[in-house]
Every structure is written in C-alpha cells, then in structure tokens.
Image 1 (spheres, rainbow, N blue to C red):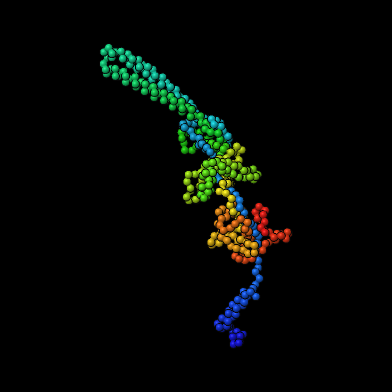
Image 2: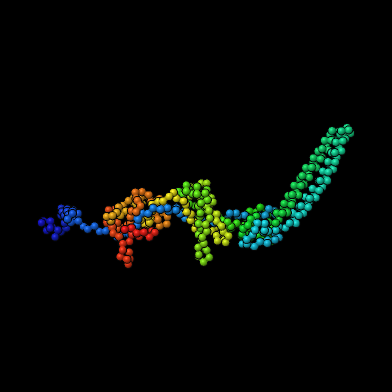
Length: 394
C-alpha cells in the first residue's frame, strides 16, 4: 500500500495515523465480543458479615483534674507573722493552725474597747436613774418640760454609746481571733509564700498559701454536642459512669471511675462541644489537681444496630460506601451512612442487611461489579472471611 511505503521511509501521514487508530478500535471491539472475551480476573479480598447488636457509644478524650474546693488563705488583719506551724505540701484538717500573727496589738485594742464599754455602761446607769427621778418631778411640777426632755435625751444617748461600745468590743475580739489563720477545709497545703517574721496586710493580693481538697475530686472534660440528647437524661438518672486512666508509678496505668455529675447549661460555640464533669474518689491521691488524664464515657444507645468492621468503610465523593459480595462472588458498591465508629467497629444505616458479606481487605483491587476471590490464610489453605468476634463469612 502507498501508506506502508511512505511509513517505511518517513513519518506517517495524518491519513495513515487515522487508519492505525481505526484498526486498534476494531481489535478492541473484537476482544469484547463473546468469542474473544478476556477472562475476568478476580480480586483477592477478605470478607466479613454485617452483624446486628447493641454497641455502646464510647466517647474518649482528655480531661483536666480540678479540686472540688480550693481556698486561697489570706490574712484579714495587718501584722507580723510570729508562727508558721504548717509544712509545705502537708495534709491538713479543717481547723488546723496555719499561721499566727502577733496578737498583742489586737489584745490591747480589745482591752480598750472593753474599758470604754464599762465607762459608758456606768453613764447609762446614771442617766437612767436621773430619768426615773425626773418622772416623779415632772409629775409634781418641780421641773420644766424642757428639763424632762433633756433627761430623756441623755438616757437615750448613753444607751446608744453602750451599743456602740458593745460592737467595738465584738470587733476587737474578732480581730484578735483573725490573728490565727486556720484551715477552712480538709486538704493539702501548697507552697507557703511568707514565713515567720514577715509583715502581712489584710486582704493582700497574694495568698499566703492555697489549700486544695483532693478527695473526692473533679475531672472536667468536653464531648461533641451531638451526644447532648443522650447525656442529659442519663446524667439526671445517675447511670452514666466516667472512666479515667492515667499513668501511675512505673508507667502502670491507674484506672478510676465515677458518676457524671454535671452537664453545662450551654454549648461552647467556637468548638461545638459541651462541658461535662465527673466526681471521682481519690483517697490514694492517684490524680492531682491540674493533671491531664484520659477520659472515657459510655453512653446508652437506643437499641441494636447494624455494624461492620471499620476497615470495610470506603470514602468517595458521594460519601461512605462498602463493597457487598453476593453469591456469585461479584462486588457491588453500596452507599451507606456511618452513624458512629466505636473502636474497630462502624455502626451503619442504609440499604444493607444482617448477614450480607462486605469486603474488609483488598478494596483497592476491587471494581464495582468485578469478581472477587477469598484470600487463603497463611499456612491453612482455607479462605479467610475473618470477622471481628471470630466469625467467618463464607
């Protein structure tokens, strides 16, 4: 042919290129007819069956340990510290002495207030006696009305002075009591800011020390707001338990659990989470205020749900899907909705039924409608249809 002669000596002409393309298309059509069909290569996969059961919704995250009560101890009077019997980092009971401020100025103030009270009480007795005699004199006309009114006023003024002195005595006695700073709670003492000999001011900005309650103790954490409707009724009934895990001595994990005791009254809009709090026993001081711990909470579920191993779930532009394998060992791509993932299990909804087989390994070699074959387990010679829980799909 002329085209062959030209191609042997020079690059093919456009007409020759079109001829070659047409010939290739005819070969493809011939390969696709019944007599020349290429064999369907089966993709090796592992399968598992769709199961139905109750899967508790487990939410995990990071929590922060906070004391139920934290008291910043400050002085309520001015003075010099004369005694610090408490040691830093020690446990204290409610009422234990923490600091003593020099009580002598306050004892003197109490004596002065007491003396003023005694003086004014004597004046009150004199004024009341004069008023009583004025009652008889005014009745007989021996004194004027103005004189009688003055006697009444003097008695009332003396009574008011006694009341003021009584309050001054109580205040002086209270200030004297404030010279001894005692622990308001059971807890553990932190760093002592001022030692013996230092001067303190009343209600100074800096605390002398802080006492934290360690048993029981709070754990604060947050979960996504989608769990709110399940959490509220469960928290009211007291059935939700929160588990805590933290590395202990030698790296051994320490486990604790306690009830969910608080659900915040609003969702944090920037993060879309709801703040929760659990109360845990901490007699052995396994956790410490300010410490970050691993938190796990199991939420009640509405009932049994369909689930598959999480490895069966694929993602496409249309959403999650699974490959379902029927009796003819051909894979069908089926769109599903993943309600949640709990560990290595995915809870599904959609057009899928209990007992159907799904591909859990080898999806990258599977095409929709393509043939699949079960992979033999190493050393067994038997096909593997492994399933979480030990069931096999055949």
